[in-house]
Image (cartoon, rainbow, N blue to C red):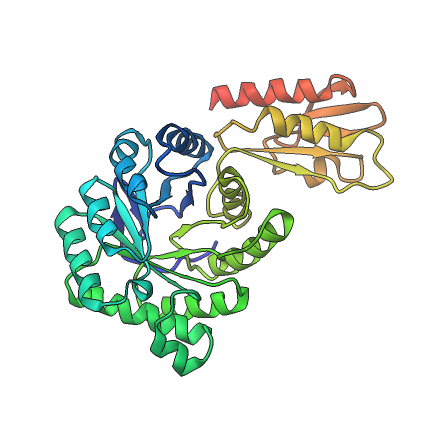
Length: 354
């Protein structure tokens, strides 16, 4: 079992972060925030996919004006993403947001940051301190010449200490860069010095397989070290892909289980059935399932039930047929044509019982 770092618990709206709370999965909308129907539609889809906190961009006045309705109708707490316009932080809090994300390094004046913090304290709004390679303070860039791990760590410590000096504790920190190793080093340094909850991710990871792999490596290593209280997989893609990837990372490390986990053989010359077709069909039919269940689809007798005995239910395929099994024991033989449907029916019966 992974021993998670002990952090203090904060609350973003009704969602606890840190302490004994599960690692929280979050994302950010890709819609224009002022398009309220589109933004709410995406938030609802993300919530159904498992998103637990949602961040929305607030770069313009029209986005700010849309916040009140979005906050009222969102099924999950809403975080306003604020950059360069401190007045938007105050006005977002007036609109009822549950959290704000600020990068103090690009707000500039310390007294303005302090005023934002004091208002958040009055309104019971959580803050995420963002520290990344694009928002480092000038003195730290001059000192280190580039946004290295030590520079990111010092910036995060600087602002965390100020927040606490101002009597504000309902905040988490994110230290992000696109360099995986520097990101890991910076978060590790911070984790060793504080009990402040950390939001983790690899910023600007990219799109498709490359972005997923880069994020999975960086986030997975940090989680294995016990570091991370909330997570976002930052992809150049539909935010629903971010949610799915986050849960797969957490599942692989035994940190959270949600939905169907499919264990399937790699393809090889021993397989006598169209295994990829069966796996894709089962995955597609079960993509909306939230109940944790482990399903094995094994392609030949070499792997079969033996390697999949920990699965709740599965198929062990032969030439033109398969054995349907539960908890390591065969229950009936089915033909290749009916194997996918038979498996789906048995899975749904199990889910309904659960």
